[in-house]
Each structure stands twice: as structure tokens, then as C-alpha cells.
Length: 401
Image (cartoon, rainbow, N blue to C red; front, side, top):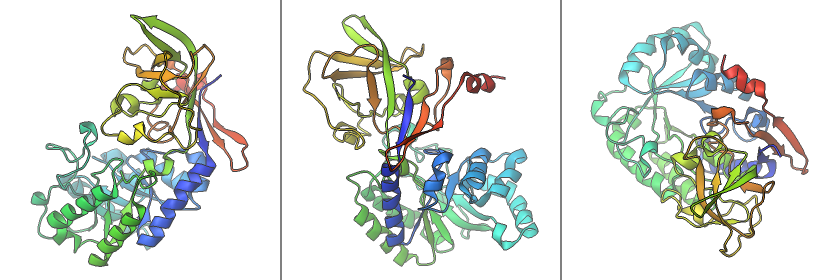
């Protein structure tokens, strides 16, 4: 069996419907962050619910314009001279990470706006750094001391620089409504004078509004209250995970069972480093069908221990002797996740299904070791399945020339 990512349209639309409901009730705009989800063959579904996306590179911005059908809200830690014209062509909003980038590229934006009609004008913003974040995993914390992201309040002039219409702040990762409430309080305290001068505020991503325990009514009230205090501001949120959250699994197969010092490893035809990198980086522990994790889940993801994937039936069995590490099929020594107890011994050919694998996976995969990339399949509302993409040797080969 060739491995595959499965997108369930019913669950994708469930997330999109909830996001649209929050957007309309709170009077804010939600846009899709490509860094977490960029499966463009599903964009026709997204366009029924949202109008814009966010990009962090020329290629993402081009994807927004050419495949989603609208110009991107673009932010990059640093724009390159030779690629900035493409950013201008594909973007409706451009956020600068530093005052030096602003000074370097503002003349290019002004020349673009002067040469094009109002419909193609680009609105500029500055990324701000509130120096506070609820994120506990260091590599995901954009507000840590020494961070390369954003301008500190102590470095901003009294008035927003010429041509700056908005502010952009990103300091969340799979965070709660309570986290956003604290962040807004800090932003208002440290950047209040500049909020009054701005036209828009982008609150970035990390708002996991489709998680079961997320306080969506609290979020609506919070955003409505914020907008009452700042009625001139257009507020934008750009989550990525929230759109693809629990919309389908990665399905793999056992290709061997090996044992070393009493530890059994089920070697799979997928790879954590190639296909599920957050399992090693975060670490993020997905639910696994017919298995129960016997080691601790990440403190940053406590819900993973308690919330099985909604796409899979709950068939977790009592702990028994059928304990395995799950090993990826690459030669990286650390390409494994463990340990898991299954309800029966695993055999070559058994399926191992990793739940909730449609966010921060397909966008971060690689072909290390020439490992075959899983296909991408969508299950339509009527239950039929369509292969959106099946990868070939040529896809791997052509990346190397």
C-alpha cells in the first residue's frame, strides 16, 4: 500500500464554517496562512468561506494570486532586492520586519502605487514585537530575547513612519482565547499610541479556534470589545492550523518488525523526519488508531493525550504486551516515535494511521533519502475519494538537477 494523506471535505467544511461564523460575529477577517496549509487543489472550497491568504515568500504570494485568486497579505523576515517586484505584483499588504527593511523598500512600494490604480495599491505595515508570548517551546517563540522578529516599542518613533498603515503582531502557537486576551492587553499597553495611528492590525496566527475546547464565544466577545475600543482598526487573524485541524490522517503500512534489547520497532513506509517533522521538532504526538501512547505527551500539547482524532473511531484498548516504537523508513537514527501499545501484535502489511495530519505536514515534507512522498487524497461529501496528487520518482529526481 502506498502511504497517503487523507483530507475529509466534511471536516474541512466544518472548520471553515466555524471560522466564518466567528469572523462575521466579531467583525474581523480570517485569512489562511500558507505556512501551515497550502494544498491549492482544495482552494475552491476555501473560497466559499474566506477571501484572502497570507504569504511569507514570493512563491507563496504567487500561489495566493494565481491559485487562490486574490493578492496576499505578505510578511517576510527580510525581502530580497531581486524578488521584491514579484512580492509587489502578488500582494495587497506588505509587512516589514524591521525599520531598515522599511527604509530600503518603501520607495519601491510608493513607485508601484503611483504607477498603478487604486485597486492594485499596496498597504504597508510594520511587525511589532510585544516581548511576551504564551509559547513554551523555544524554537516556536517569536518574542524570546534576541528574537529576529519585529520592532520593539522602544525603537519606534512617536509617529508611525510615512507610508505605514498597519501593524502586525504574531506571538501565538496553538494558543487559547485567554492567551489572546493577555496578548491584546500587552499590545495595547506597549503599542497603544501607534494603534491609534494605524488603519489595520494583523494579529497573526496561532489561534486554534477549531480545537474542541477553544472558547469561541469568549473570542467573539473579546474581539468585539477590542474593536469597540479601536473602532477605526480593521482586525485580521491569520491562523493556519485552525483550518486543517483534525481534517484527516496520514495512512501508512508496517514493512518490518525489528527487535533490539527488548524494544520492538514497527518500521513503516513513512518517515517522521520526511512526512511528520513536527513530531520530532515540537514534539507533536498525534493520536494513532488502535494504539495508546505509553510515554508522556509534550507539555506544549497536553490535549494530544486526551483528544483522539475526530476522524477515527475510538478503539483504544487496554495496555497489553503489544508495545512498539514506530520507526520511519529513513536512515536518520532519530526517525522514530515511541512507545505505543496496540490491541494485538503488529504484522507486516498492517496499516498504522496517524490522526490529524493535514496541518504543518505537506508544507514541511522533504524527500530525504529519496523516501516516497505520500499521495494526497480527498474524500468528498458523498464518500467518493479523489487522488489530488500522486508523487513519482521524477518529482524527486527533478529537485536534484
